[in-house]
Image (cartoon, rainbow, N blue to C red; front, side, top):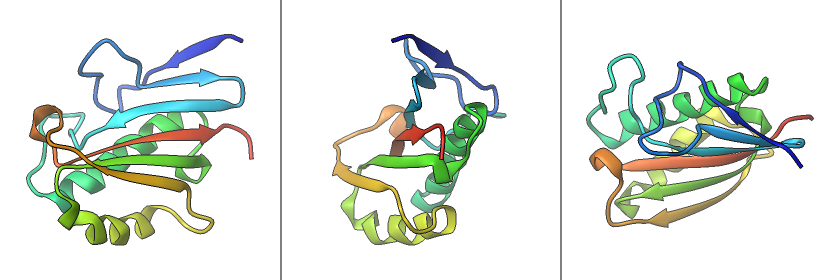
Length: 127
């Protein structure tokens, strides 16, 4: 099966040798997004600002694939502080609606650029 790399200038450039997303058949695998603002390449301060920007970045990649956040079927979230878990849940309800995507949340010691959150996703390309 063929795979296709997807890239959009509306989301931050990859911080290493990886694609923003890979399309395989009717699925797309979205690389982790941290809250970098694409226009400035800066990371906003604070968990809330970074989380909103993370999801906006993820949305830009879904749009490049011809979909939107509602096409995401699975999220993996990495947090540097699990004290932010309830805030994460509240913010997610602003971007996703039932049925919510499946999700795992993992605590990690550190993320690139001292980010507080990273979110990756799996997307169904056809509804």
